[in-house]
Every structure is written in structure tokens, then in C-alpha cells.
Amino acid sequence: MNLLFVATKAPWPPIDGGRLLLARTLEALAALGHRATLVAPVEPGTDRAAVAAALSPCCRPRLVSAAPRRPLATLAYAWARNEPFSIVRHALPAVRREVELALEEERFDLIHAEQLQALPQALGAAAPRGLPVVLRAQNVESDLWFASAHRREGPLARWLGGEGQRLAKWEGGALGRVAATVAISTLDAERLRVLGGPGARVYMAPVPFPVTLPAPAAALPGAPAVVVLGSGGWLPNRDGTRWFVEEVWPAVRAACPGAKLHLFGQEIPSEGESVVSHPAPAESAEAFAPGAILAVPLRIASGVRMKVLEAWARGLPVVATPEALSGLGARDGHEALVAVDPKTFARAIAALHREPETARSLVEAGRDALSRTHEPIRAARELLAVYSSVLGRRHGAVGVESVPTNVLANF
Image (cartoon, rainbow, N blue to C red):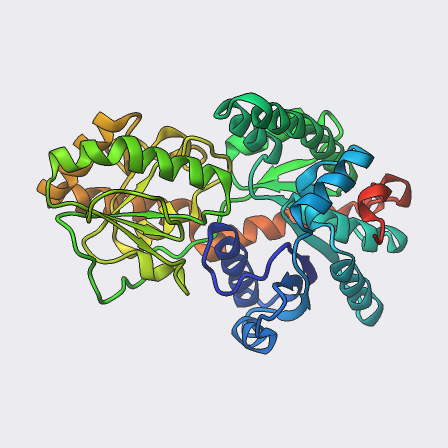
């Protein structure tokens, strides 16, 4: 197949879960002999040639120098047109123009939109050509906003809840506009079917991920070293990390006085030398040091945590909240240890530090899960089956009348 991918960010360097998912997908499709062109924005000032060179083995990159809209301008535009903030913020005319140019230069079988926020660019360009669009939903966006509202109070909570309502309406409508939606977990697929209603075609295709990956050579200090990894620009990460530092970490230190917490990609004020902040790694592998324990303290989550898959592949045991493990089918005491509060987090981390055989057992079970469900070629074939289904009923492609013109306006 000849595929046109439209994304909200380039997947290199793979420093967060969304980028890593897209990179692994493109690699697996290329390994199966399929051809993919990727249109994605990169921050102004980025060395586009270097990013393109890194991506060229798995796709033909068409990178656009463009940044998400400034928050205040986005708020004003979204409020005036009653559109969701996150959709408006990523509706970039320069990206849409590049998609249109790619479609003028070459014939593609379909367009793959990576994440809900990529849809304005994909739908707007596809509509006049009758080209089918497949959306891969990395999570249920509106649910994240509702859950974020639940964790806040006052005006911010009300705004987040209102955004959740607007986004749920937009999200449900979008599921009816595309030829198919691909969820990455069974839980998300069930929720998206409810949002989209009877006409939505929702499938599930697992995340592709290697069974084993090398760990970095250098260990991190701490007995044990505990890693929390996640972009501070994402509210669920900020919420979970702050909770972990302020409430969980004192309990961990009481159980393991020599423990050190290593925060990658976030800097949370903390007293004492037991918390070390690291910049976002150039590549995610840097955070998965040998002998460390990955803690995933998310209290707001949807989709699949790529960091958990990477921990298994690189040989690190995982302690996580139920929310962080949702969508993975991980069982407490088998593939990971589940922690719901500071005491259970502390007990789990102490157990892994004092019982290396338990840590090894969790990693082995995690790798078994990777082999059963996430092996890249097998996972890519499930995605290709969705594409084939769409192409088999080509008459169901997107129509011009279904495009949300407010968001697509060249403003």
C-alpha cells in the first residue's frame, strides 16, 4: 500500500509515548514492504534535515516548520466558534497545505491520521478527492479532559469540564466522518463506540513494540534507583508526578532510605538530595537504566503507556497505578505491581529492591505479553487489516459535507 500519514508531531526523536508509537508503526510497515509518506510539523528552528534523515529508513518525511497555536490566541478563537481548544491549537494551515501538495504530487491508497488533533489537516485535504481517512486514536481525548477536571477545583475545573464536553461532541462526530477508527486498547475501543454511536466503525489494533531492547550501559545512583518518565507539558504527567513527589516519595524513602528518585522530562520542586531532575532524554532509552525501577503514578490515563512496554523490553520492573496499566491487561504480581496509594507504592518498590527474583519474574512476564500481543510485524498486520477493510468498501470514504469547516479555516 501507499499510505499518507498525517501527524501532530514528528516521531523523532522518540522522546514520548506518542512519538514512539508512530515511529514503531512506520518501522513495522516498512519492514512489511509498504510505503509511507509522513507529513508532520516540527518546531521552528529544528534541524529538519537531521530529523528527516533519521526518519528516512521507515518513511518519506515531509516536515513543516510550524508550532501549535499560542494558548491565548487558541482560547479566543475556540471560544468564538465553540470549538475544542486542543483541536483548534493543532489545526495548522501550513500542515494542511503540505498534505494537499503531497496529494497533488502522488496517488495514495488512504490517509492515516495519527491522533484526533491531526484530523482537521487530513479531512480537509481528503474531502475533495474522496480519499478515505483512517484515524488512530491514541486515547479517548474527551475522557482525559473530564478526568483532569475531576482533579481540579474552581474555575479551572469548570473550564476543563466544559472543554471535555465540547471535545466529546467533536470526537463523537469525527468518528462518524472517518472511514474507520483504530483504538489501541479494548477499553478505548468500547468507549469510542459509545461516543461515535451506531454509525462509527471502530477497530482495535495493538501497539507494535519489540520484545527486547538493549538497556543503557550506565546505571543510575540509588538503592534502588526509581525512575518517573514523562513530559511535563502534559497535564496527567504533571498531576501524577507532583502527587508522587509530595505524597508517595516520603513513604518510599521511609521504606528504602537509600532510594533516589530520577525525574526525566519534568522538574518538580523538592527538598533534599533524594530527588534528581533530568532533562527530557534525547532518546527515551536513556531513562531505562539497568537495575532501576519504573514508577508510573498516573491518576489520569487513557490509551496505552508506551513507557511500560519499553520498561519490559529493556528489562525494568514496573510499579504503577491501575489507571496507568489500564488498556494493557497487566495483572498485579504477574507483569507489574499495582499501587493505589503511598503505602502500596512504598511496599512494592521495597519488595522489588529486596527481592531481585521478583523483579526478574515481572520482566519475564512483561516480555511474554509483548511477544503475545505487541510483536511489531503481527501488530502491523492487524492495522493493515483495517486498511484493507476500508479499501474494500471505498464508497464509504469521507464526503465534503462532513468536514468541520470552522476548524479547517485558514486563519
